[in-house]
Length: 408
Ligand code: SAH
Image (cartoon, rainbow, N blue to C red; front, side, top):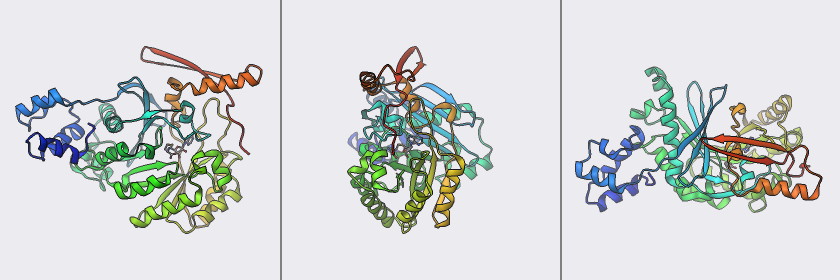
């Protein structure tokens, strides 16, 4: 499953087979959800036997599933090396969005993000990325009655249709754990499979990559795989963004916005979505809304205001509803398309990195923070102990209640 179509075609040619075998195998794997080579009945018997012996189909295992009262579901997936990642599925009336991870942990250290607490462990492989889509598709299809044809048709009116019309995932966002542009080649190959008509068949408008702002890789993405682009902006000034998204020190806002302009310039009709997590008294003032509007004024942009998803041990709070509404209204009054994202999965730790963060702490970053804190202070009376059982394993660790300084 680590091969995109062009690579599979080359593989079959090397085996002395016609290249259309690649399309057949992709359809079996991704559209009929078959991983048994013997079941691929339009391939010759000897070829099936050879593939069964030589090809490896490795899929992550679902070790935990959390259903939210609002209908979203979060899967904790175990990889072959024991690492865990997570994917979140958000079903809505006319679409189903899957949020996919690109790395185990993350190296970017955004100050409000739960994944940052785990530090960085490793990049995901292509099959671990596309395997999240495969698993979600399988798990969701297994628990849902088949869609009535009219609804299925509506869901897929703009996508590939055919076998795709039965599938629940209509949109994919690379917004789970990790920075996708730091795992460039694997993420691009996996996204090509998401969009391949013989695999998941989504249009490029329905595949979104979210980045904290890795400027050179945004340009590479425009050339290699121009999917919809989302940028985690979160602040209208470099001074504040340096604190929230430390990558900003390397690629400040002006450079980032220039890269976004180049990206949409290459593929007109596209807009960049700017994500802006609403942090109480940090980035949510009227003046900051006006500054954001000035920054984005001349850009085909849409702003997604994300209510901060809180978790144990974090010092930030979600902005109040009236403050979020004021912020949105200022942007709207400056003609910037702005939506406030619905909070989904609050009850299932659906914020980036939250569930896996409770289960794995590979770099022991949280314990180090706790040790540093207890070395300089009396024992933390307000630390939060988290324990989660996953299958038979039980992991416990403590998160300090306030591991970072409160931002100005
Ligand atoms: N590294 C990529 C993708 C992963 S994070 C990026 O930075 O875009 C996906 C989005 O969720 C980002 O906008 C991130 O800033 C946001 N996010 C992370 N933690 C959050 C939280 N606790 N509440 C709300 N949004 C959060």
